[in-house]
Length: 534
Image (cartoon, rainbow, N blue to C red; front, side):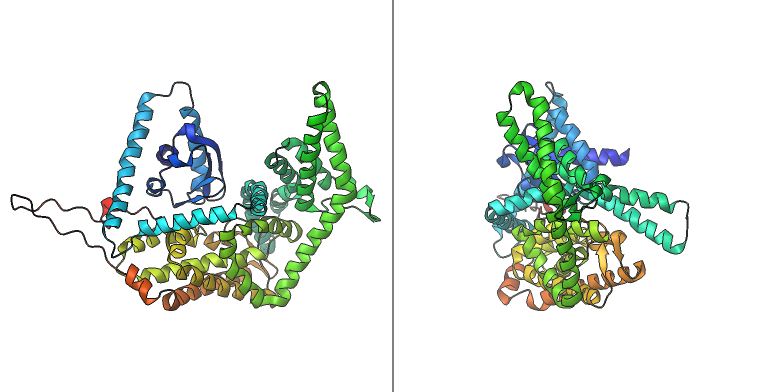
């Protein structure tokens, strides 16, 4: 009960700060973020939101995203949805509305006062000001990323993100089952665990088809119906391009293409079929036309593409090794900033579908390790700036678990150089894991989404779990160390240190007309002025 009350309290604190229930157009969540569609972005109080204890940060993209962290977001979202529904009711309780308004009023002045204090002391920069710089960078990045290609990649990501919880759950069960099989324990239970772990992956094409049709504006169940053809065992009796088809051929890529085709066929039918016949003709033609194209074209083509992806990933790490890992680990954070990382989601899913794990994710996760190391170095290089150091202390636990947004947008990216040196840390960590891949020790993840320490339960490889865990842990340590050293020695110029490594002392008491001192004003580093940079 206490946990439920805490989650509801978090949702209640967030709602008025995003403009209330009337301003919320859509609600969803991924692994770490509450994703909101908003009617009016200007009604959001960013600084007050960041000051909510459970909020790790905010990210503005195609949706407004509030970072709550793994586990928390899945518990807060239902409470938030319920509060939004209650807020949209015809006769909401005045007391509840008054309480929400009062909560917003109490939170907002604190953030504003903190900003005001920051502006009054130009000699140093606080975490709140650093976060403001990060917000400006995010806004500029969003404008640059609003290209048709990147918007398309974002839609592709929206198809796969809802599948991540099932991938994680089934991946952990698969890892547990493998451990039990290797140990020879619970032999009567392991077949059941294998079925649980494999059932979703056997039908993942159906879920991809459903989500694709939903994302592109078609009827979701028709997208799922067309994609189901790909995994139907009976396709083994069909020959296309001189070859027998095999169930699952083309995988998620084939399902995605089939569902997109189904959406276009359906929309074409909706415009031309008489309304009286629509309910019969449109679904039939959608499944028939899209199904025939899928069977006698898409399955073969997508199968060839999927095979090429797996072959290339294996070749790249078997031959490129440390060099390939160095480049991938070093470039991942810039890819995230450019919005291009979303193109990797179907590739990860294809590799998991083919091989049981993706060898790319552990390498890319090293970018987060470099970020953690860089943040630790910033902490030690700025011993006088308690405001920024407090932000780092608050954000580091999340960073260790793979939630890097608070550190990126609140610390390293606004500072400039530490973002680059964080990439250097990721490059060395990726190179470490890539080297072992070249030596024949594959390190993979059975699901996508988590990174950092949260990836340990999902690790898999070709030489035993203990070896895989040891290599991944070694990569994290290398990433932490390289990111720390690169940032400590090369992350700050003299001018940067002079600007940021300055303490903020409370103002001296002023003398009143009667000769007595006035009450001291709370400084920005006092508890009452907790910066909203996280």
